[in-house]
Length: 350
Ligand SMILES: NC(=O)c1ccc[n+]([C@@H]2O[C@H](COP(=O)([O-])OP(=O)(O)OC[C@H]3O[C@@H](n4cnc5c(N)ncnc54)[C@H](O)[C@@H]3O)[C@@H](O)[C@H]2O)c1
Picture 1 (cartoon, protein in one colour):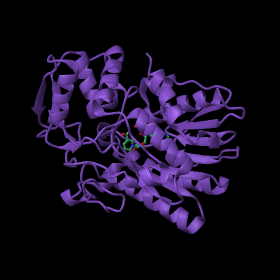
Picture 2 (picture 1 turned 135 degrees about the horizontal axis):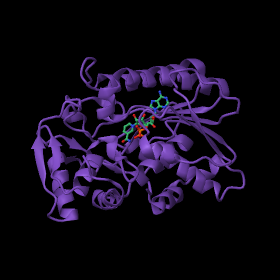
Picture 3 (picture 1 turned 45 degrees about the vertical axis):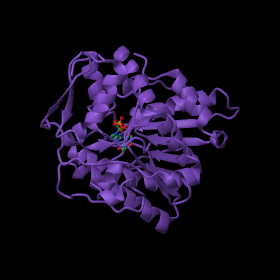
């Protein structure tokens, strides 16, 4: 299986303006076998082919949700992959310049299955990685989530970083949302009290080739149903909205924060346009792929945590101003690239 598009990696590398800053540096990344981690590995391999002093990359993952594609990525002389559960302490001999903490249980399907692991990786895992950053004097980046905003009131949409959130401590999603919130608080404490330079990223629904069929987030679910020529399943009422950020825009933004993010800042990374309901999304897919695509609106399955936010849309003003972030792949184009890839790579069983 080809897990991504080489042209997407070229596009990402081209768009990371300050990639030369990484020459000769060592990056430690948790969650390196996950959807986003695998892109980091490929981008590092690509930049290393042009660097005199290569980037050393140490990837950590316990493979709890990394699936088939996660076990497929390969090491080379500059890429080392370590199997480790970061809920436990981690000792590393090498000097480290950047710690990127992306390990997490990101798909609602999986955080319903593993609620304690979800909370643990966001809290104890983050604490261990902050300790490591402190010991190594490394810049720290935490992959939090737009879910820290919970279900924002309409006047806070598009949602700016200052919005404090409307989140339940007791709902079926709380293990994820509250875990990420505590993870952010830990970043703040290590920044203020222990001199660790931290950035927090709040991703808003990234998608693209490399999302596994068993990821169970909305677009892989749709990809699987399209492959088997079955109607798309929309949960709830279908009027819940999201924004979707194609993977090249996402990974470019993530690298820009890692390299250029201002000390102690938190950044929304996503594509605010369009904010689209699930029914409108299905209609758009129908139009892009042809009339054979149908959809049906069904109740939430037991495997999916209900209480999902009604609307989700980022304000990306700060990322534009601080790091020149500029998402540019329109939704129609990203969906075309994604479903072409799912049609070639999914089995279509869901
Ligand atoms: N992709 C998105 O749209 C999105 C949106 C919001 C937040 N995020 C956050 O970004 C990060 C990466 O997302 P992703 O889409 O690549 O998710 P993913 O599930 O594909 O990858 C996460 C990886 O972390 C690993 N992991 C989980 N617990 C671990 C532990 N205790 N020790 C070591 N490894 C562990 C998993 O095995 C997996 O490979 C996550 O923290 C997620 O919460 C992503």
